[in-house]
Length: 483
Image 1 (cartoon, rainbow, N blue to C red):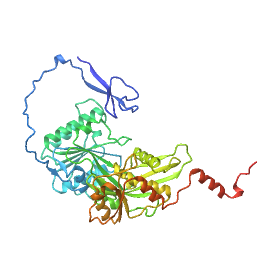
Image 2 (cartoon, rainbow, N blue to C red):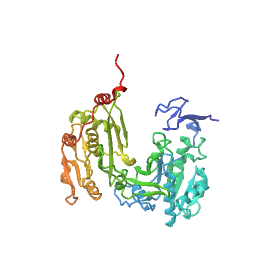
Image 3 (tube, helix red, strand yellow):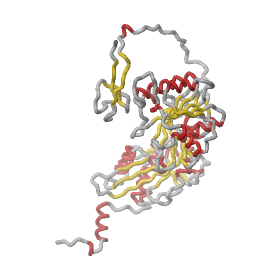
Image 4 (spheres, helix red, strand yellow):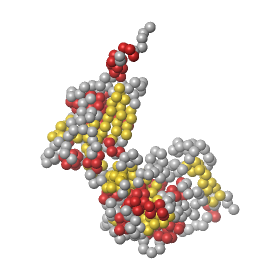
């Protein structure tokens, strides 16, 4: 009788080790190794040898039909998936706890069920009564969605195989599923991988679209082995701050559509409301006339989005000034600060810098460099920027402003929202449409923009000058007597 083997598997990255250790050498996390039983060690010589079967080889030339799409009834969700769910595809949706994943999928399944499609919602974390309460709160209790609370993968597949094949199946969540094929506790890496593989095989065989809900770690990454993300056809990330009502559905991976599209939702008392014009929503509470704010005309996928960038430059009393960034890359901010100090003479070494992207949106586009630099100089010089101006352009290490793509779409979106001028790279001025109706200010280098902003403002005092001014303004009776 062969002896059963066991290994210690990291629950964060899926790496396997022969013995337990406090720190995972693959990902660097502590106390994540869990002992899991492996397959029986059977010698290769006594294994049953199966003769392989031949299969037909195809050529590259041939007619390829577009994958049929199944609209979900939510325009923002269809935008991110590429036009709807593909038959036989498997999607993985991740997000922070309480961000609205179950709410989004409940609305999507209800809309598809009302359209006449068979949809099934399998909940492994909540009871049937809890899911019904959510549906009643959303006003979707009358939708013909088939509901169950089950965690056994074999029982789920056997039940779904009976009758007509469902068009959409939601598994909430994959971390609660377990299968008899492996001897591990539910939620472990081995169980998650085996359960996902069984559901993927069922989706490919039956043609049903399956959505797997995944937990996330403290770093925002989807929990479990990274191999699950490679196994599925699409990975969607549901982002947003709990204190704000905006939610962003972002496509991280998509085999049947773009990977740079976003869907914007607003959390309300009746569920998630689709936002067809995100620019108007992000700029609805804009602070007009305040120093340190600039409007950036960006592109998210195929959609132009206007968002406000906020910067605060304050004198620092610390030896190392603080740099705090929300919604933008901190390394990108450090590069812009270095270019301002090296080529434009803007001394920021004695100031704390706080940078924020309003509305909870995260920007990954280099075209935001020019708007960020304008907001930083505006805060430092105490010079408000024009309220009807938008900024976009990439800044190089030499201080030059480089051109960016899709200039006409950015300008048309700005003109539609009532903006009157645009500050853009000099090389892209010729790409601007003649019917945009905007006053264009081309910038070849960052120095000219900084000089224009600083000429209209009053510089803030440095930390030592401010302390000296406060000391002189203190009444004499509160000063400490010398000697």
